[in-house]
Figure 1: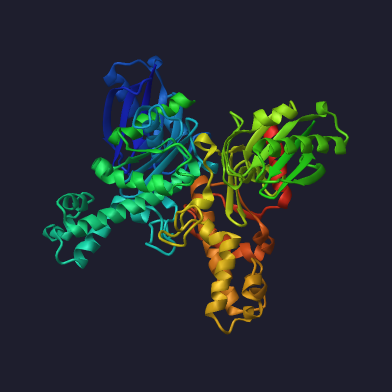
Figure 2: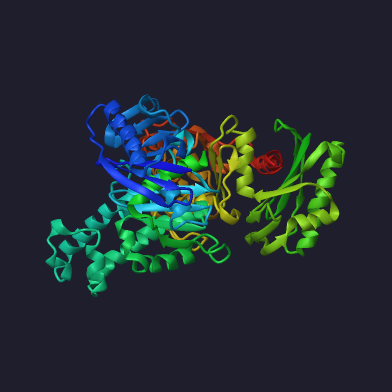
Length: 314
Length: 314
């Protein structure tokens, strides 16, 4: 049996077909075309699904349906997107619309949750049943797997761990609250902090980078070269991220915490000091089993792989 | 069928028998007698169990076993307490010891988790399936119920939401970390902050209370009388507690958050400003269903009632 997953983003819909071991048979993407009526957008998903099947040379009987990951508040039971900010959607009946074009089993989930499920079943979290994934990008996405199942929360509106506060009255977050992890540990926040450090420290080597070209790698590149200011930015970022991870450890006591997004490519240079902080400051740290902290491994495929994996849970 | 619950504390073991509706048939307590060998302590529990049965006039066939709540890291599967700080216990085989004296079905859980289960099944959370309980006492205990089941975490070491940080580099917590909710929202923290406010403000009416007689009610009593300093202490405490509740809402999106412990007797005077903050700052606050925030209702009975309720889950 094969499984189709679609990962709907603001710009592209990524999609692919995997087998029961998570092996990718085929993957592709189409433009999302936000701004059009939802019926047209969803019709494209159905056609994309059929195209993936055709390109892989699979019949409908050989695939178990389609899993769809969407950024927003998704109710898989009713098949409705309650709210998807990027699309301006409220109460959109996805399953009903998709079924107009293609009569298959459909399961849906929040995109960050899907990524966590994908990484848990087939990526860095393979072999673990209790995992947390933080994806550090424009925002901070989070997904939590408990006993092999996604934590959804009532109305599927939970698992928003990017919006735990680590600093009361701190930096303003896009959600309107202050001090959220997203406002400290996202790539956006890291870039903000790198720019601030450049402006404040005339002697940093990072001055050779124009402020509008600073990205999430800048501080790491210069820290590795020995630049003190860059090292401070990195050290602070590590402390922010450690706060988030220790919170997750104290609440869920997962077997592994996985870190996704571009920043995670820094690997042990990023994670080793964080592991030490987590060991030292997590609750009952010396008694409980050590929590593994590793980069996610599926990259941009995590979303559609996890969406496809929704079909394996149901 | 009837259910026996024991709630083991550092000083007393509270116990009782309930029916399937949570109605208490009988309740009692015995001294814990910490410091003695664990075999003696646990033998007392077995005798206490038998005494409760005898006092209620019930035969063994009429009760479904015993549920035991213990402050620590408890593995119900193996029947072992991995760690209980107050008792200096590590790897104590509770089920095995108890069974020496009394051959009954035994289930065990962390005491804060038991209280959450009790409040959810038979207290303020009755009728809800997704709940969070914060118990504000010497520390901050927390319990989380998801789809009617306790969140335990790997090795049953999770759900330590009293040890989420709300203030990086903030007040030192007993756990060794800084900024934990426990270091801001426990009764201990409230008393500390009240004393500090008294020392700092020569004109507060609270000066008439000797510093060593300040308790968790002091600031509320004087705030209600119009004392500005006391009102500030209360307002700050409400903000700390709101931070914790918003975190819990964003992560779990429960239907209800319940507040237990002595401070919760302040009722709406405490909770109404917190409800407004939670409505305003929780993620997707205007889209998602409103989270109810209410005082717990079972008081000191929550622990043994919830311990007994462990038997209903199994």
